[in-house]
Length: 367
Ligand SMILES: *Cc1c(COP(=O)(O)O)cnc(C)c1O
Image (cartoon, rainbow, N blue to C red; front, side):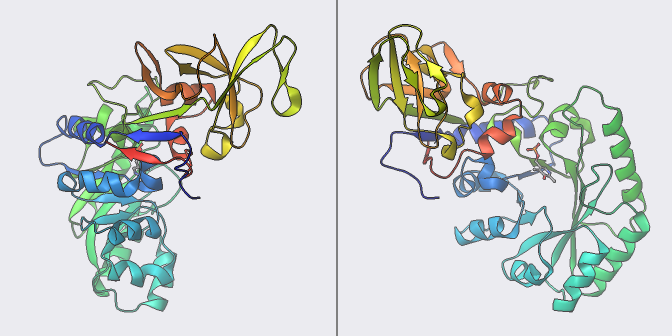
């Protein structure tokens, strides 16, 4: 989808805030910990190339979810080590090696398939993924891991890392986290060869279990100024939200009582009302379940009335405002604010999903 530039809807991304957040987390971890910011999914909607360019001098590497995301950064001239966390198609390993992209090995079957395409694995930098309790990707058995590592080394590959991923580090109860940690530690204890780095902590584990990080951390949500627990746990130091979303009133009309608004004629004005139209809709990631949510126009909260359309929404204004009036959808106006977390709660989801779903139609403007 192309950026729509001839439309007053835009996301402003403060890269200084992202750097600030990265420093905040890292300054609360042991001094030799490596930062591997997670810039998958277009840096959680914030713009992967811009974020990676900003953080490159402060990052040991970046994490991506698939090979194309890594290649995007290489194409943009990013020279920092890159790690793909997901499963890359076996035939694409050659491309990863060419572009010095480190890959995750999470099963023996996958490695067998890779060797069919690529018997010589020299230059292949791999990270072993341990499934310590997430149940998704990874090995669950130490012997299996050690055989796979030996096999990879025999074929000329480099043991760049070993890692796991926590399922509950953002929850108040630490029981399952401790179980996963203990399992991972057992696997590490049985490794006959040491990799360059060991990493387990996502944002939540880095924030709430700073004593349990290994040699590197994979930081996503928190660097974008979002609390990975929502409002369950407090982040013990200040962080700054990095993204604001604004639009402008493109039409304002006064309607009499009993006027229907939008698809399905689902809203009817109860009195004479001022209705403003904004050029943003579900194709931008402002989903239909946002009907009834309140936005900020001129420092006043205004409800989205009528259905959310693909490209437009309508809001009830407290009085006449001229076209061109800025409306804040995420961000601050004076003492009033709307956060990504507010969107998430309204939509009964997590803040991650809100920023990831802001579509490419919304231009990102960098500060
Ligand atoms: C996405 C992801 C992360 C980052 O998680 P946050 O909660 O955003 O910090 C870390 N590790 C893996 C394996 C991931 O998939």
